[in-house]
Image (spheres, rainbow, N blue to C red):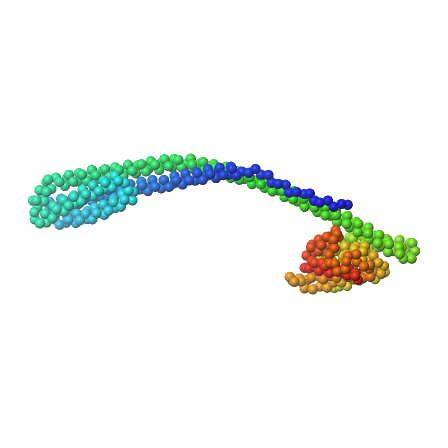
Length: 436
């Protein structure tokens, strides 16, 4: 049977590239995100401006109220000459200064040329009005009441107050318009934001669906590739088993021929010779079965495995085979590779070594030692004596052929190590493996 190389191939994954679609979706999402971010920033700025306009209106109202309270206190003092009227006047003056400072701070937070000019005119008018109030109060305190009243009768204070109201109204109208403009801009931005959020949601949903479809196709392709890989591995195992079966059948025929030849060399009667050949072939079948594993037990004695494998070669009441070593229980999973190794060594001995000569012998021994990583380690020695000179040159440590590769595979399954030598006295093999 000729070995056939494995031809299993893993199928290529053919998934249509969706990079352009993903790039387009990503760019669209980025644009939508920037638009939404810009809208949110603009909303925040509009709210800040609207809040500043409301604060400015309140501050302006406080300025007018404080100015009127100051004028009321001044009039009361001029008419009654009572010091008590100067207390609300002084309080109004303090509130007026604080309100002007507050208004100036608010307007500077949202700078505008028109607001600044109006504020400067208003500040100058209020300053002139306060100076007029202070002058009349000073004249009254000095006993010059007639002059103070004459100053009031000239209507200078009224004109100043009217002008203050006009400038204050202008500033309040400006801030009110600004607040309304901010509110309108917020409303427009919010109206635009809702459609953007809707489009973003739809785009995100589309991206999720696309990702799910792509993942399903990728998973299907991966499953197909995995199945193809499993099929390829199964084919390789079948090919390997077929090669091993072919090799074993050839070896069995060689061993059977060797058994027949050895039995025919004697002078025993024909019936005795036939029975001897039948017994040896039956023992060979039992040994071959021993290389296939146990009978359901969790562990099998190492001596039993080796003895069953070598039983066909134990001629003359076992004088050709010597087995020595302590009792070692090996797991069932290790029986097949151990039996395979011993079977291959025995087959080679029957074909080329000690078992091929009438006086040849094989000595098998082992010892149990601690392993380097913990646990126990079996060290087994195979020595052949009395056979023909080895076909492999003396001192050689390696051999080729399928049997050698099968031994190497079995050794690797056990996690062990095997060395073979072919000195002039006969083949030697040293084999060690862990049993934990």
